[in-house]
Length: 274
Image (cartoon, rainbow, N blue to C red; front, side, top):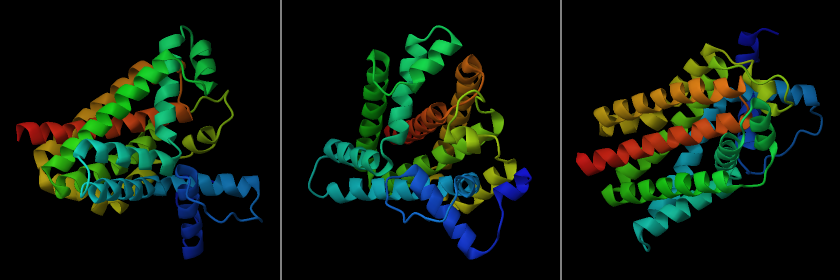
């Protein structure tokens, strides 16, 4: 089957719904009824097609995160609401990207060779570098969320949802631009090398209602933050991915976390200097 057929195959509603449910199952801990008749091959095929829905699921995760932040702001300070919102997101996603950030920091901080980096990245235990990266990364996200809440519900909702959506769009871009490491057996390897530019375009257009409000609030902030996120991804690809000669699930998750961070920081910068 060609890449194009893998990207958008079987136009019937049942197939599209199944692929969306696969994306939800892969990116969150929401219980999705499992197809008992599905074979490993059919699941992998559905997982490849489900990448199209990653940004949509990311936007829905962002909506849930923003909803918790705004709801709790009725009775708590913005900082407490930021912790509750990020904590809820971690529970919803199984701390997927936070784990990727910690593993990447541990591997890059403690590994000297490519083999050492990949070996450390497979270890789920947190070391000094992973702990430090997690504390700083989550801390900045909490502080940014608190700042956005202080600016009003529109800024908070638009920025959080846009950051979560665009982070998953960035994952697709990284899949297309960088091949997976073939020596590692993982689901990321099964789906990364099969994505096309069409997947990126369709998923971006499909999720436009989720992030266009952020651009409407402040076009300069949105364009500047998006440009900064793109530059960060180029640096990440040149300095980090080239070091291990490919990409892994942890590296994809780490890049998504960093995109979220850059976008939220861009919004808070605009609030402070707007």
